[in-house]
Length: 550
Ligand code: VG1
Ligand code: CO
Image (cartoon, rainbow, N blue to C red; front, side):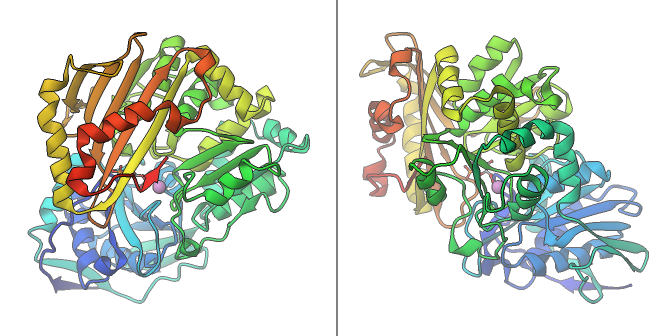
């Protein structure tokens, strides 16, 4: 193997965000841009003994630039001396599948090429992130070090060899190393069969239960065809948009009621099947809609926690649960009832890893349609959908009935997120500064029937490794006359690629069963108005309404 050393210079701003480095494809296409990041990654993670004897997993969601990026990562990994490189066929692996393969094959880590729910194609977004040996996203101390290295880089090493054939399963030798192309779906399917009662779900489909799964032309298509149609016996056609496309058919592969509108419209119509679900670009998110009944992701986490015991993997109970700070507090009440710990972490899956590794939690989730368990170290869209199916197969109730009885037992946390996208960065910063300066004076103030209990800039103290992460969102906590809680949370997105995105998260607990099941935006109207007012959003940004409301 002939290794070349290429001279380069730093690029500004190669800073990983909530979930890796995410930029426009055109940014990644600049000469050396991706190579600089990959070289910085290898420099930071290289153990004293080097990479000999170690395995690297590589996979992506199939979006435009996936192939080009994978070939580069392979050649740079070979130059670093990795002994084995495992790659999903045609470069395809969902994010949870990568996480599983890292763990299953005891790899050193994995490189995931994806920009998740962001749009793809030549004008769309691309992304790269690194997952460590536990299968989870690299913690902040690694991503910070990669960034620091990228700002001083002057050269990188790469092997001169021809491109690997990603389409043929099997092993190829390159110098002292082997490249193995593995089935993208097989290991993941085996894992799911270990966790869930497939016979019960098969019987559910046999009984006439109907479902639509929308793969949004993203990575889960092949997984979903295999699991739902081939193995569980759902009729062909249950999975739609099941062929991964490099531009996701021109849509945002983001499973929310806005971008998965077709599914939503079907589920709210007379022709609705019993169960609707979708996943995102890289397969780690999930959307679940019952017939006539969308399920808010925060509620889903609570319902799954309360009913997980129906699945074999969780029958013995849960260690604990965790949710990201902006996620609604619905799951907290379930944890309390179960007598298990409930942790509140910053946004992003990397913060769950330590709690999962230490067996402090079994399930965790985020308001942004992400949930998972200790079976991998990523959120897992199909896992969540299979857990729903397992629960429905055992209880034989509708999603609507399940949700309504959940609210009757625990109360309902009305919840919404308002996103203001592509705001000029200095305007977005002005909004955050405006809110921040008010925080110290808010406690004790009353707005309508709501009194501010506390207001702060959230810092997370990791209970396992003691690390502290500051500035994880501004939160204002209220209590009302009935002593029930409400919250407003503000944060800047760390996954956008154009300008800045402000996210407002608005939540109010409703204990009175007669007031459950109302339209969310109506139920939260006063609080939403207050959230806009406290942020002075219209004056500071010129935006009177959010771009995406979920
Ligand atoms: C968003 C979500 C966050 C999620 C992240 C990655 O981040 O809010 O909950 O973990 O995307 O999801 P942000 O910083 O834009 O709010 V995905 O499916 O990339 O892996
Ligand atoms: Co994703």
